[in-house]
Image 1 (tube, rainbow, N blue to C red):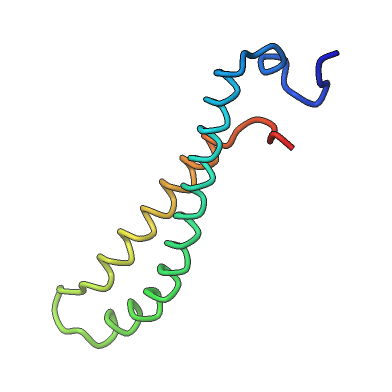
Image 2: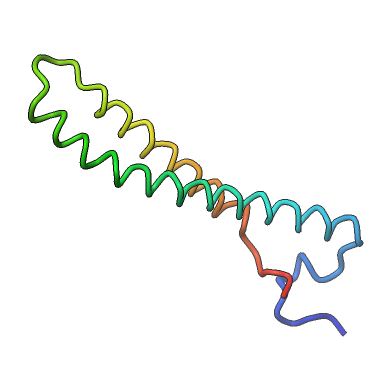
Length: 91
């Protein structure tokens, strides 16, 4: 009897297909971890960004650029991780 908790398209898979799905979900978890780590780095950079924006003269604000880059990486990695982790977990 098929497991009723699994989506319909995942009920009759071969062992190779199950391995492929597990690897995809592990890669998705890796992207979510990277996103969380960059979220922590972005939080620390936010403090330096405010200070840099307040005290740095002219238009050169390197911490602002670093902050924008880390937030972008955080969002892209988080979205990619969520897409790859779709479906029900194995256990």
